Image (cartoon, rainbow, N blue to C red; front, side, top):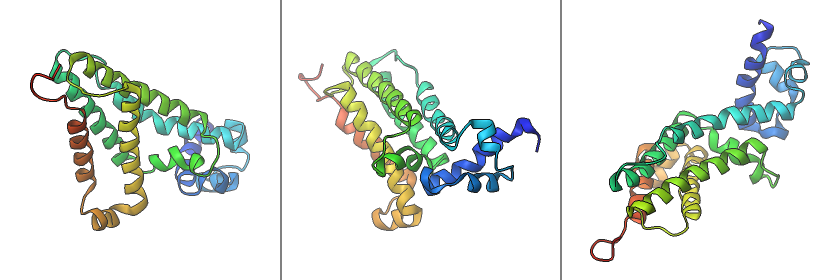
Length: 207
């Protein structure tokens, strides 16, 4: 393996190990064995196992932010503003379907009672800001009936990621057995629930 490919090889090999075993449960030897590189490669290319872990997390969270960046920051109509929130949720669900290890990677350190890694904290903060901006936009058009945009954005983010974590924990067959729903069904439920919750009241009371 050429030296220039080694960092990429380590990132690819380390991600499933960290996702399955966590940071403390994964050794440098585990990573280098999976990557088929020298034991010193992690230190040489990343400086430490912690730095490699944070590089894995930074790369893993990037698609989530890119998905929301693909939703324009400002709509041109009342309908556009409301639809953008649904589009954002569907974009997040798409990433979670494509990368089902993400919820575990995001929350494994916090679940163990440890401080969340910096890349995770930064990514969640950025996602929350993007969702809050969409809610704020909807309120400005009168197409969203919601309170605090930040708290509403947090609710949307928590609901989406928690469903992804539930799906990952139970597995498709168990989730279907418990709730009678597929991943697509769960996505449709969250989007419909959000639409109903944020819809302004009809009639004279509507803004």
